[in-house]
Amino acid sequence: MIKTDILIIGAGPTGLFAVFEAGLLKLKCHLIDALAEPGGQCSEIYPKKPIYDIPGYPEILAGDLTKKLLEQSKQFEPGFTLGERAETIEKQVDGSFVVTTNKGTKHSAPVVAIAGGLGSFEPRKPAIKNLSDYEDRGVAYIIKDPEVYRNKRVVIAGGGDSALDWTIFLSEVASNVTLIHRRTEFRGALDSVEKVQALKDNGNIDLITPAEVKGLYGKSKLDSISYSVLNEQEKHIKTDAFIPLFGLSPKLGPISNWGLEIDKNAIKVNNSLDYQTNIPGIFAIGDVNIYPGKLKLILCGFHEATLMCQAAYKIINPGKRLVLRYTTVTGIDGFDGTRKEATKSVVKSID
Image (cartoon, rainbow, N blue to C red):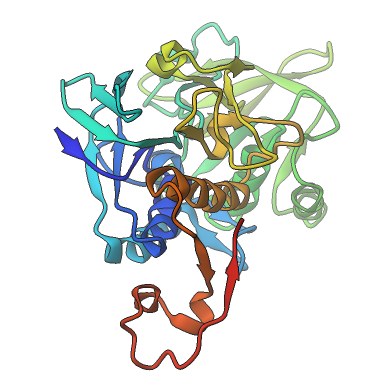
């Protein structure tokens, strides 16, 4: 039995930052993740994708963000159960929880924080008859290493942030990038839309809207695609790669059977207080939760993790006064009163 203070299900950015916030409160964390390495989607799906909305980083690659978060949290020595999926949860007489993985590993903690991101997921695939014939032979649904497309001809399909971001990024890597979207309007960030339009106006990419990819062609590997604009006759483009980026189809998996209140494949939480679920002692933070005004941003997950840890402290230490100390004054190790150079303390009581 692995015992800890906070059991975190999901080792993505939100789960990793929760380790740091818990560590400041002298709470130990253990993380469970079905992936073999920590980092969640940032490491597994798009490690080379640039992220622009992390405070202090005008731009940082998703994989590098994971490395920074691991470096930040390692001082608090979190435990990891990787390559295993959280399968069942049982509430004990003393109010604690026992979570068992699909491989039988048992974990015990008074607080459980579900930080599973989108959960298990599969890419949404376009309805192209012979699409599967070219998977791993020119067709890809995620981009792990953009260098694969160095000096290649690339066609991207989609109208969301991923399609826009990768079009911008690959415009400096591939020999030619074509973005095809079935509408003239895009669902992504306005700034990204403007950048794509500027790339098109300057002749750096080809933009075809409203249009849809209809067919894939090639013998041993993908050689070309066909597309149609509205109901016009199909046209062909020579290409080395076709990347349809239509998002992911998320599934909560076994967590959906834990008695939690679910809405739109996400876990409902009380966002007016601490992101606790309908089961006391179980929290949901990051993309896995839902509440009025929810934004699926890593930045928001960090905020939710911070408040969750404050609430977890009160559950683990009932009746004990919690004092908020500022790291700018005490430093990290100053939280236990041992840092000699911390000459003063700025504190604020939390009711």
